[in-house]
Image (cartoon, rainbow, N blue to C red):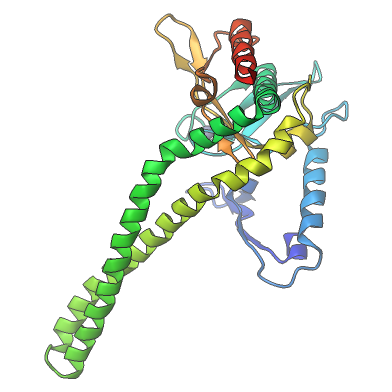
Length: 323
Ligand SMILES: [Zn+2]
């Protein structure tokens, strides 16, 4: 659908193929530049989003008419692009994911970041259930844990940001005064035009750098302070999913913001590990160590089921939390 319907203007839908090949090709959607609200929208934003999501899913239907439920959610940890989903036409089923950039541009730009469909399914399903169970069975403790995980580490960082913000604000005000004084001196011919130019340029550069820093700091502080509100929003949603046995598009879209897949790493014993970070809506990524004292890195020598012992252990811990 044309983005102009909702007032957006899109740049960069096509690009030049290469340095020596000036043919224009379609750019991946991730590379589009969308400038929002350039003109009055023709249809409502929410409606457009819903229709867009449905169309996106429909486009990804396989030959059986199934929707690829992870569409748009799985990202590469290195380059940030979406992982491509691989479909086995012969068997008519999804087999796994790999980095879009790697597939299209090769190893100079990224690595494969490959992960199996089954593994991804199980990882996400177990993680949702683990969180849902803890949220339902041990609500106060689970909430406490989330708050701790989302704030404790950040508290010191936030305090540091607040202190820095004060210093930055003070210096910005000082520079205002200096610049005014300098201008006055110029007007009173106490400094030469040339000297004024050199000096004011330096101060102005410093000030604009500080203003950028101020925006960044304010953003960090605001984000840290909305933690409680977001946890309250997240709890009723996650609680619904204690007993799910399989995932679907609706569950994934309601709960998950993105899933970040890391490259496999070699363990000393010859096996491989792969880190997968599940970022939930409202609360983002919560490290498993902080939740249950368990690492989220799963042993994945082959594309097989997650270690049952690990799941059992997590479930025991969740039960323990309920007491
Ligand atoms: Zn990548």
